[in-house]
Length: 235
Image: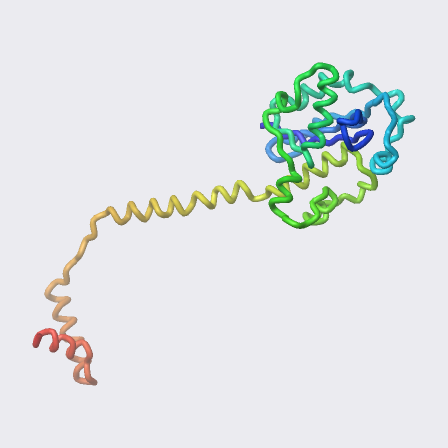
């Protein structure tokens, strides 16, 4: 399944208050490798941008005046994420905004477009409970260079998220292989147990040689083997 790492920037924090998407970006990963396929647009929201939000992403309303509106790029976005595993950091935020945008143009929600939705923030909290799990914190933890991230930007954040996710899930395939190995070893052992055990008895020449060896030991010192044999015979 294709994996699509997606991020958005918005005019504010709450879509229920009428805030809009002003940037959407997504990058494609196939077989745990970034392909050259990506999706990226700045969007005219037809409304003001909260000052706090602008301080985070640095996108001004003046910059967006000549950009397309969400309705103009919606079909292209749907085609890009269709039937993929859609991976986002704090997925409820991005999904909420995208669904509001899709709803305004009477399109189906994200959950009906993508085959699966994965939230890397949820995964990180399960792996690192009680720790900071922002994208910056995870980049630092996994040694991923995010020096270009002076401001939030959807395309760079989507690319960084892909790197973080690969680091978070590294070794899962080999782990599953290791879990299979003991079962195979146990199966091999059971097959060996089922085989008949062959006992080869000593011939007369070997018995005589053994007796001579025991006798030579008895001449040099007390031979425990002889004592045990004598006690067995007496009993």
